[in-house]
Image (tube, rainbow, N blue to C red; front, side):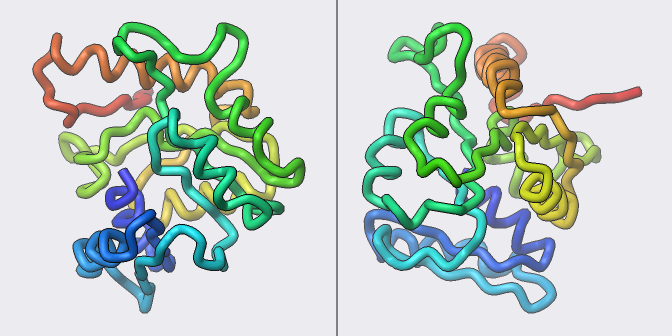
Amino acid sequence: MARGIATRFLSGGHNVTLMDRKLDKAKASADQIVSSVKNGAKVQGVAIGAPIQDEIVILAIPYGATSEVIENLGAQLAGKTIIDITNPLNATYDGMAVEAGTSAAEEIARELPENAKVFKVFNTIFAQTLLSGQVDGKKLDVFIAGDDAEAKANITQLVNDGGLRAIDAGPLSRARQLEALGFLGITLQGTLGTSFKSAWKIVA
């Protein structure tokens, strides 16, 4: 997912930094997508713990790892726009790991500094489809749930610049429905035989 999202942002002319516990892995990931760079954009790989210069931080990690990463990054996340892409599935993948009436995104927001702006984005999209940005010749729909209007506008611009279609899904509490939609999409892959290459699309 990190490489897929980074590919879209780079293709839209935006700089990307990939962070990993291992510096060599971060640099290897950056090298894999450098061909997607357009309009002078730059991509680099750094180790977790390096100073975060970017305004937007994407948690492209499993839900179970979010608390550890947030703790490690600490005060660096203050004031940042944080994008949560997780689908909080339980250990048997037949339900959610969060209680009813909340969401992974809302739980993550509670762990972050108060002035961090948290959004749910990309959790209904599969990694393979992000590399091309489309399915069946149609742009991917990207649902965005969050409360800060200015930050939402910035995310919308990034998404649209990357050749995708941003859709405002409402406040952060809508992450509950988006996570349910993400869960349904995952469970349908075996039934439909689409090998995680399908996508949700709003048509009218």
